Image 1 (cartoon, rainbow over the protein chains, first blue to last red):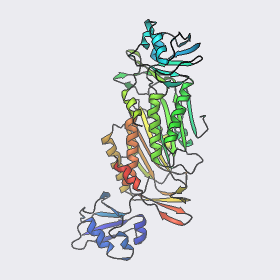
Image 2 (image 1 turned 180 degrees about the horizontal axis):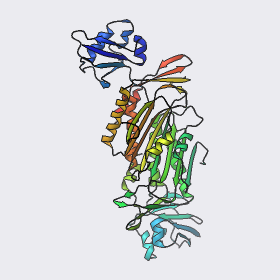
Image 3 (image 1 turned 90 degrees about the vertical axis):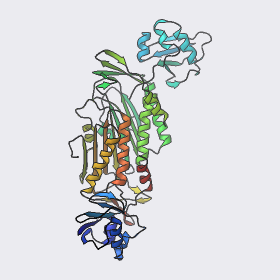
Image 4 (image 1 turned 90 degrees about the horizontal axis):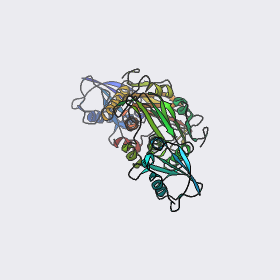
Length: 84
Length: 84
Length: 154
Length: 154
């Protein structure tokens, strides 16, 4: 069960890559759980840690932490947007 | 003691002229009194009668009925504006 | 407030170029972050009647003063860098432009608020009157109560 | 929502012609009474630092969807005839245009409200990020709390 994960802006810079393909570990079924799983890698990934202002999208729609993640999903993490 | 009086839009049409020079009668010292004086002429002038939605300007500034009228003033009567 | 200055109004029979006016609101500046603008046009229908044309009457002299005053009030309420108001008079047909209001500011909140304020105030304070040509003859447009309440919001 | 239709969004690196976009919002129609528009530009200063340039990163694919959704929400709330949104990405310098939002409606209240709503929502919902070049180096722009509260008004 693979998901595609994308990082943008300051998160992309902190993590050092624009994204990756990932096999979801057992027990990781929501955006919030995925975020915690990634943050636990340490180093640049701590930019995803709890308390940081991170937003997420699943399949290109902004979602909250409780959003389910399923096989084939595209999950993106990024800081609050600053366009316009 | 002369004042210049101007009429616009539907008031100009009702009265049949765009304006006139006028010697203020004794006792007419405000815009409201001038309006009542003119309305009393009857016919088209009744478009100025009380109850009609008429606005006024003195020296090209919108004013209320209590505004004083003095020699040399330009007084205008018109319906509510509809520009834009 | 003459054309060419940062705050200017024009009352004219001629059409205007909204794009050029919009561009001029930020031209040769690097501190403008927001340009809000509005163009009002003649519609072919109003209150259920077809409108084939309209004539805009105004009060020469007072019109410019009223628009200057409206712009001055906006400047006192918001932080504005440039303002441009153009209002036409004379005979206009459906799809013709009537009015342009453009506001340049550092931030969008000021630009939007001032642009809408100027339009709302203009609708109730600037001496213009519309006479529409309809299938049942010419008629003077009645002032809208909604315009008074729009202006009263500010 | 593709360019050319009455409701369209574009995400592009190229500049746009705000005047042409504004004109297109009422072209060949006689029922448009109001066109409200907004142009956002790069300022040479932000939060006290000089800005020599900025780069706008975005999320290709999601950006267009987010803008479509914002326009759709506006259509559900107000009576709109045409809407055009253009947002640029890539490297931009002070005075460069960033974003265009234009709304055509029969009446000005709808046009103003929808135009400001779209800008407010775009600021908090569309996946763009600004990275500014300043004398002390490049920095990612922090989201403004005022943008969240502006969007929360609606």
